[in-house]
Structure formats: C-alpha cells, structure tokens
Length: 248
Image 1 (cartoon, rainbow, N blue to C red):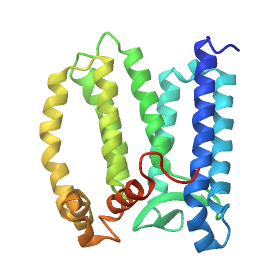
Image 2 (cartoon, rainbow, N blue to C red):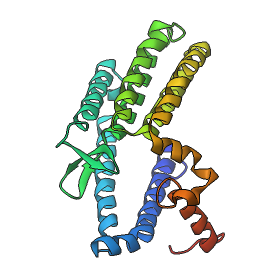
Image 3 (cartoon, rainbow, N blue to C red):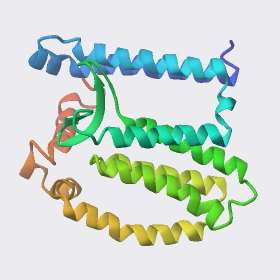
C-alpha cells in the first residue's frame, strides 16, 4: 500500500481521524466520567467498543467486496432490516429511553446501537442501487422519484416517532441529495419541498422543545440548562480556550 494510491490515502486519512477522535473523546469526557461514574475512562471504553465493531464491519465489507451490495434484492433486505430496527426501538422494553426519546437498542450497559444510524446507510445503499438499475428512467415521476421517495419518507417517518427530529431531517435531506445526483427531476423535488414545508413547521410547533431549540439563539441564557445549553458551552469553550484551545 502506497500513500500515492487512492485506497492507501483514504485508509491513512480515516486512521488519522479515528485516532484524533479517540483523543478528543478521552480529553473531553474524562472530567464528566469521573464525576458521574468515578471512572475517567468509561466514555473512552464505550467509544473504543463501538470503534472496534465499526472497523470490523468495514474490514468485513472490504473482504467480501462492496460491489456485492449493489443488487437491488440486497438493498431491499437492508431497507427491510432498517425498517424493522426502527419499529423495534419504539417498543417498550426493547428500545432504551434517554432524554425523552426512544432511540437506542442496548445490550448491557456498554454496548448498544441506534437503528436510525443503520437506516441512514441502508437508505443510501437502496437509493444508489435503485438509481443504478433505473439509470435511464430516473427522469420519470413514478419510477425515478416516487418509489425511491417512499423509502425515504418511510424511514424518516419512523425516526420522527422516536422522536428524533434532527436525525429525520438529516435523513430526508440526504435522501433528496442522492436522488438529485442520480438524475431525478428538480421540479419534483421542488414540489416535494413546498408540500412538506408546512408539515415540518407543524411538527416543530407541536413540540415546545423543538421551538425552544430553534429560537434558543435569541436568548440562550433564558434556558441555560436546556435549549441554550450547547450554545452557551460553545461560548465558554471559545472564551476559555482561545484560538488553540485547551487540553489534548
């Protein structure tokens, strides 16, 4: 493997990012882990477990050959598994409630995963596979837009029920971006945006915490431990750390 090879360069960049991530997790969470659990490495251990699982899956996919995921039947299977995961997490006793949302399926105190994260990957693979098979028909309304859009709407709708509005919004934007690159007509996407905009506004209005988060920038100190917490912490970080920051 040479650094001049695209694959070698990508591996080196990903390894560097993972290493920096490990350092940052340990540096930023050490104090809070000590205060809550009396163990400064608790967050690091959880992060490393997830990292090892992710690297193992990545190596497995490379070994098997990522092109084997291209057939539509595999994309359908992954899409179905993602939908099942998003349904299971909504069931009490299976989904773990944290922060008022049921987003995690946990196996013990250290291992767990968010079905919405798997749903993101499954959605991308399905849309890419569908677009590859129907590359000459992506300009059509039904086959090139409505059918793949149904997959996006289904997964994002289940994610909203958790509720995880932020992840659902990201998934919707990601799905539309894939369809745009695949050749779907812009007029269809523009109409979809016009139709869904009022729905998004209603979803934000019906949940007070979403409205608070949206307007937190106007007076973050009015809810310093809630909607304005992250904004205030970013000010503190910039104020105390300056240009080069503190810690590792």
